[in-house]
Image (tube, rainbow, N blue to C red; front, side, top):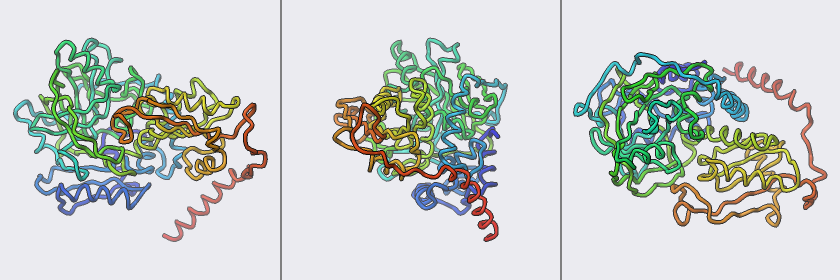
Length: 480
């Protein structure tokens, strides 16, 4: 089952008991951020989405959805899977669908629901159109943090393969004035560099309140030239609907808000601080400037916000999207790779399970992670474990580290590597040592340690699990 817009997905979440409607009047600050934090920390891995329907200072038509992707049940439902799908199975399903990228396609439509209202130029007031608030203590301003931003290489505007849809945070600076954070590795930064070199603005489309797959894909480390709309199609198994604007950029059909804008060349302005996914505030940095020229929105639009801060929050569940890209890239070179877990802070820590080809093979896998496009700027610690260790099961991973890892033989440190500037541990900013921890069983000619007497689970346990789960379900049903 695929969802055409955010509204139909919220209806599904409510049907499955994964949506809380908050109808009492709330203050933008501190009520919304406090409720989001309590939701993530209190309900943990099953936290529901929140829908704020009565925000002080705004009309009754203003609503805010939060934590839409903030739990494993919500992520599973976004994929059309049962909400109780185990994490390992969910990750495997993500991997399999990711590999259908070549089958993805778009569907051009002439109109979209977000065209119900259109505000041009000076009629735009972003402060009135959306219920902005500061999420974390110390935030230096108001942010749009769950927008999918469409750009295309300015020298190839007729080439769909040069289009990118990414998730980049925006600080609201004025009624139609924003700043944007772009990392040099991001596709949009490549597009803007080409425009700025010839003193041209870069056309972008800012889409807010999207169907649930697009935010997952927009924040996924795809390769340059891999189109996000095609990936959404591959994940849903259906053509992805878009509407082409006058700028030739394609906006998602199911959005709540669509903003046409330009990134201005040779203009920089202070941006931040902001509570980042690292669990730390970023500093104040000079960022690019954005001017909004037109805003479209649906009647009674849904503004969507992402919970980000001290883990775990919504963004940490969304980081399941980091694993498939690394898995596919590693698997192409090393078929022995079984699974990849890059959940932790967008892959600053990566755990890989693999069969062993030869002695020292785990270290080869670890170094390969560091050389992937995403690993180059993120992976700081790589843990490699045996194929029978589930990298999504932290007790198993810790057991492997406790018993298979010997610092004398199994720790590799690579000095002076590139890391994203937001890593608070980098020194200088953007530079870090990296580490590979080989927690796999040594194989010849590597012969340190004695692992000949390892205990194995009985193979029949696999058959017994569904029986026990069925019994538990019957007990739960009778208790209700």
